Image 1: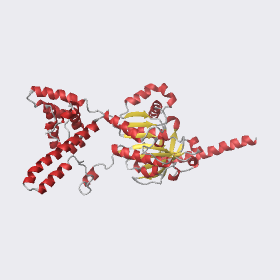
Image 2: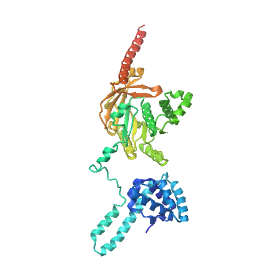
Image 3: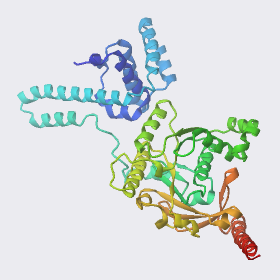
Image 4: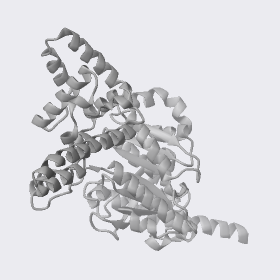
Length: 448
């Protein structure tokens, strides 16, 4: 029998580390792994313990399980050796090359299966058992295949009814969350479309802050503002204090941070210098450090560069959004980003899909798209209109009144028939009257 000796002792430890942390990989390779592939007696004991426990409970053993199993070892030399090896293995839990180790180990096991199948076939050939040879070879060829076949519709009704089919991250606005059937789910992409200076970055910050309040881990990528200033914006959203005044309210902000359940990582990348693959690699590093995000914020996707060569900018933007959607789908994490609308949308009461700049593929790729329109009167009245352009989870085409205070990062969306929604619509009307009075005053001054 071939062993893993050729790969070195560190490789052995990394394989054990994977078998203690990666259940899908254990499911995939379970039938192929033999303890004799490992050189040391301690590694053999560990892999046998993991496989035995997994065969019984369909789960990986916890630290408490290993501790109890260790207590059963009567050989003191082996017990000390296993304890020391566990310490070595645990140091490899976050190594960056574990994906390479998994592939190499899987290839090794598959080759062993095929070699053994060929050797077994010699005796079967002598006995004329040709059908058995085919079965044996086929089994070896398909060893290590991914076990997850997909969702079996007829067999898994209970999982659809009992379990939540979409584990969602809520938005800060109940009316929008309800419309989205709970929020944005794993692997889904949401887009905020608005003109320049309308408050896209603030809205993305508000979404991230809401997730933090719910105890989620958020990674916020910024391609415009520096990391510290984005951090100040989060301070503002939580404390209701303008970024320029945070230094005067440090104790208040520190107390809020200490009592916020979630975690936030803010990472700056230069605009048009990185691709979705760069974000992918950074998320992998976060995972390796034990900081897998529950929500990804990208401010904003239009400032990324495509990993695939494009002949025109509109085509490149389409590629970018497709690559982002693929990335969040692979990680199983929801993501929000923003997109610029055309300059002509500045005067629009409601911004529709055709006003989104340069590429309609953004709309086609995203799962949820909402626009934000703020005319001159809205900026005076601190109001806005939110229009649902696309919604895979429910109704779209609806428009909601909103209020927005850029200085303090406050953004709220209301049902138009609620008391707050009625007040917001009245404020919009007052904003119109205010604009008219300002224009009248200016015209009177010119005539004088």
